[in-house]
Image (cartoon, rainbow, N blue to C red; front, side):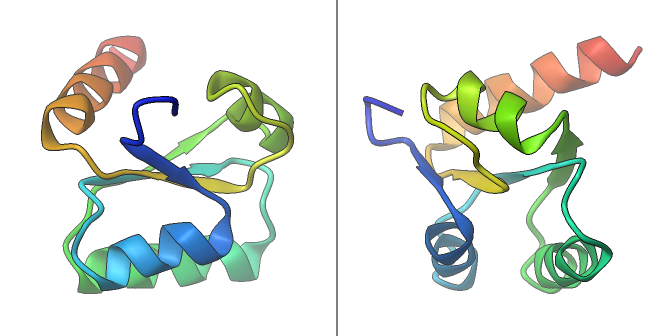
Length: 91
């Protein structure tokens, strides 16, 4: 977050997706069904990988903030590392 490679919050996340700046989007697992569907459709349309992680509190804590429903990684190298890390946890 400090390096400026991550944006968080619904407005900033959606803006980065629509401006083709997001390389990966992570959404809290406890968001509403409408929010989940909105991000699924948006990320599919803009061809951005989408992952669901923990709760809003856990997602915010992971980036040193409070209570975040979504975040976007806007650095290609960091996004690659995040995706690899998530895929290792899933296996």
